[in-house]
Image (cartoon, helix red, strand yellow):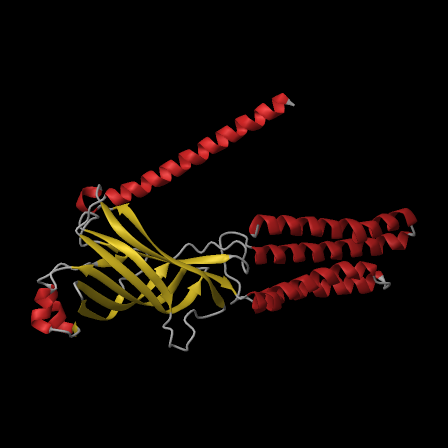
Length: 349
């Protein structure tokens, strides 16, 4: 009993030690961030007007975005010249040549962003630079549990008008659509699950490759609409699997069983062809791919077993007939369940 108690105390000691070490490293990383001095702390708010053309196969999506950046500066120049007005176009560009302002590029954009318009304003002692733009973004299209699981639609906004000693993004908020807009922002068969905004400091080849620049990163996690996935993909496939198994329990001839299994075998590729636009083509096997493979293997096994059973029946060998019946009624269904569990744990869990 004493040995067990000592072992528990020892394990607890190591666990507490590791937690304290992790907490210390976490606090140190945060203190390091706080120790960084910067000339301009740029508060940033992003709003997605449109998120569309989400393509897991190609690993990209498209967005229309509004970004508002706010920072402290010598606003007297602006107020003396323009007063309480918002400027844009050539007037804004000419004025911005006289002041410092944050410049950025979208790091994971497949092409340079297309800017619709920019405006500059002053609120109190802060400049507010607004921009609306659209971009084609690349993503990690890793969704092994498709149609289940979530997909991270991220956007990396990288500052380049100064390293972290010059400017750091301060994330404020990420929004999905305007509160008074009545259109759907995320297009297609996707629903928003979570969204957040964060800032990271990354090295760049710029400035000798050693200095860090501030990155503003948006994350919009989306999931496939589960009702559509169940109705279009899961229900038809599970129906094929159940029918293929139940055929062996129905009191019909082997010839009829064989016809039924062959019919099911032909239905599977037809179903996959019909769902071609809904199922992404990926380099890995996702849950939907696994279900198609499993159902095809099950039905094909049913065809082979039924054909063999039909030949055995002609020999009138009762022992062999019983073995074949057991194979079709017990072994194949059991293996199907086992492989289904493995598929669920390897792709979804």
